Image (cartoon, rainbow, N blue to C red; front, side, top):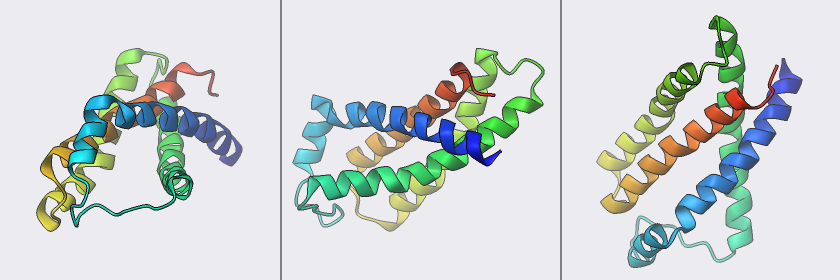
Length: 140
């Protein structure tokens, strides 16, 4: 079971990284982050390449966990190709992935509220990208 998780998790992770990158780089979101520059809650990365590599590596661990969950759970449904099952599972996994981080940042940090909202939405969409890609790709 490890080989499919590593293989399909890498595929889903690359797709996730591209889609989430586009979500964060769209002009509206980029403007919100520019406006928040200087906030003590935002870390300053001097090297964008190092930041992106750290982001991908850290996120990829989550993607492998999501991949393992998806590959296991899709075997429990009589018709795993059903799109509605993927959406429901994606919603559940998104809530499990996003809510704890969102709540802790809301109550424990000075992270700008607008950016917190962006993080929440993009986290949900990113999780759905992973789950739907694993549902739509020819995964065993």
